[in-house]
Structures are given as C-alpha cells and as structure tokens.
Image (cartoon, rainbow, N blue to C red; front, side):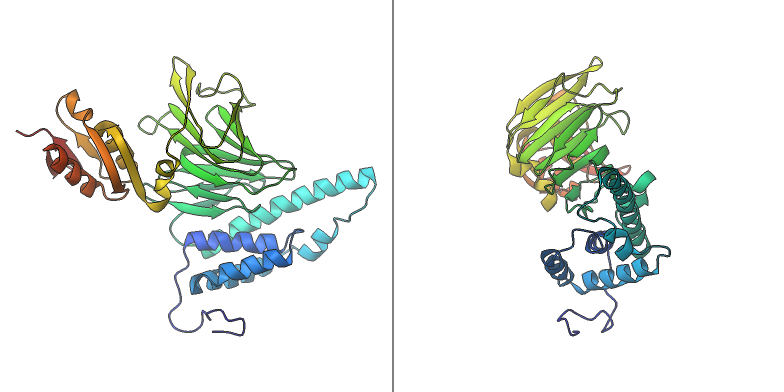
Length: 356
C-alpha cells in the first residue's frame, strides 16, 4: 500500500492490465487534463483506481506515456478558453478547442494501444476517432471521452468520432449498449445501416443482424431509459434498413427494421428488457422461442456452431430457459435431453438430429 491507500503495483507480481482497463485509464487521463476537471471527477477517478492493482498500474503507465508525448502543453492549451471573448475570438476559440479535443482523444487512444495487450481492438481513426471491435465470444466495456459507457457484445465493430458539435458512433456489425452521458450541446448519434438513433442522455441498445457476415438484413433498437429518435440517416443509404419517417421511442419499446425488397418493414413492440440485456451477464434467456432462433442466438457466441439436421419440424421445437452464452455444448445437451434428440460433435460442429 502507498500513501494514498491504494495497492502499490511494485509489491509482488505485476498485475495483468487488460485492454478494457487500459482504455478506461487513457480516457481518465484525457478527462482529467480537459477543461471540465472537477473535484467530483477526481474522486471518481480515485475510486476507479481502487478497484484493483491492475487499475492503479494502468493509470500509472498511462500517465507516464501521456507525459512522454512530445509537443503537447495541456495547461496552455486549455487555458486559451477564456469565458469572455469577442464574436470572432469566440469562433476561433471553438475551432481551437475542437482541434484540441480531437488531439486529446487521439492521444487517449494511442496511450491505450501502448499499454494494452490482447482483447478489444483499439485503432486510431481519422481526425480523432477510434475503431473498437470484439471477437466471437468476447464482450467489452468502453468508457468514452464524454463519460458515455459503451458495452460491446460478441463479434461487434464500431467507430467513434467526437468533436465540439456532435458525438457520433457508427455500428458496423454486432450489438452495443449505450449509457449516454448528458450533454445538451452535443447530441449523441448512432449511425447503423441506413438509420440514425439520436439521444442526449439515455440508455439504449442497437443490434445489427447480418447474413453470413455479409450485407446487414435487420436492425433492432431497444430503449431502456429516456427518449431516442430513430430516423433515416442524413446520408443516402444503400442497405434499405431505415424507417420511412422519424420514430420517437418511449422507454421499454423496441423497433425492429427488417430488409424486404429493398426497403424495411417496421415493427414496434415491448420486449422483456432483462432478456434483451442478459448478454451483459454472459447469459441468453429464451421464453418459448423456436429452436432455430435459439440456436442462431447461441451461435453468435461460439466458433463451434450448432447445426440442426433433419426436416423443418426440428427447427420449430420450442425452447425456454437461461443458458450461458459461451457454453454451446451445454445448451445442445440440454435441448437434446429436453426433446429426445441425438447430439454429437462432428467435423468441428455440434449436430442436433431427431432420434434414429
């Protein structure tokens, strides 16, 4: 323990710093050197460091790398934002601050790359954005520069780009849950396929369904708290997955857009929210769904696929229950026992078939 009461990373084995912890440490450094630093932020950062020795070590390494970056004088940079300026001076300050914000996020991403190992992939993106990705079976929590928490589910790819006017995330594949930090001056926009989801401070999830890893064929947006608007993207789309007109969603609602004949059919319902976000606990919850739908969901989390053999009646069997997302073999055995099916591992896959 050191004078601050935190575990000293120099005592005993060096703790393993995951890429998630590294990325969060980088964002904390960027926020603490920004114009919005406050005693509350400092206390929250200290609490974050007390979570483990790995958190403390990540923060120490991140600080060292930040200070080693040449050509950056943060104190001078942020001191340029004076409270009173002329109209022309204010416009210039906005431009300078936007540039500094872009640089700060770039450095945060760079620091995370330098101190992180395997896990979530973090790459620099043009003009201060970043690309994040999880592999099949992986999940990752990312703390964005504005305080927004972004949870990535299995096999997900997103791009993040923030500036002084807008916070933009592009979901390229997979599923993500956003706990959006409030900022009345900067809307938070998630662009996915041909749609945009806009919020100021709220909690919602976005899931993009593909077809064998190719062009997306469906989109689901589930609102947990607050309000969001789902609308056609401002740029012309090519995938045909967008509502015909903007939809203002209420908490508990889910909108599903499915590609059909070049356009999207639209459905709004109210699912069980706990089931929708069960993946954050590494669980899949099924309530009287078809075996085909359950198998499709379980296959998202494992590179060893479950395959249904036999006629179409097998796919229509019903499944209920709670299963671990990474345990496809356990799921297949449970379904086989429930419905009297044969299950075997063959050719790198799990096969379910009617009894002989």
